[in-house]
Length: 234
Image (cartoon, rainbow, N blue to C red; front, side, top):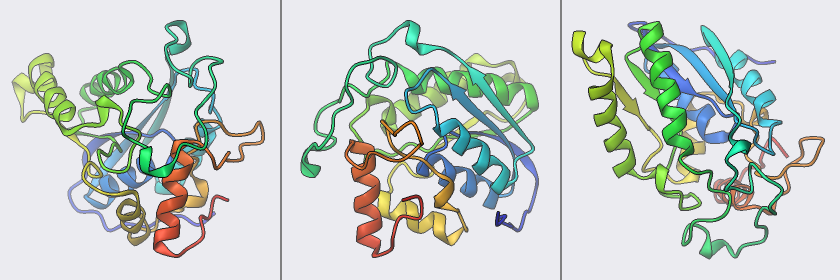
């Protein structure tokens, strides 16, 4: 497996939320390129596309993280999403309608929960930043992917931690927040991200093959088409 090499400057620490998808892999590569020693956190929340956890392991190894924690937090106990229940994942939504409404793939408060766990991890290892691969451009309309949410969580992080009272405040970084999926892939390719390791599908087959029909698959396929290159994961 080809390993990505980076030129590092000051090795400050950063926690990266690593789902196994295209966006989180790109965010991790950006954090690495910016000179951080990475501590990866993957949440096993009972998602139906649990095969993405295997992708997260491969990405963490490829990028070269200091430590990778896979943390079980079973959100199936709450339900409320097709990703954590037997509810059918929406398929074949007209592309121009994606993001206009919040689909049933929205997991209640998922990014709030994930960032809270990442914040605890960051404080425990002395990390200064937390990277999350959310975007408010090519996305399914989730409310916890908006800049307003990110700004509010930054405020929470500044108020809620012991470390914040003793040193410079934590910073939540979302380097993809204003990028289209095409721009995200372009940035990742510049950094040598191996997108063949990533899984973006909400409803993959038992063998881990993308359905190519859910909103997440459509956004990914459209971006690679715009770039005029094949998706290496297909």
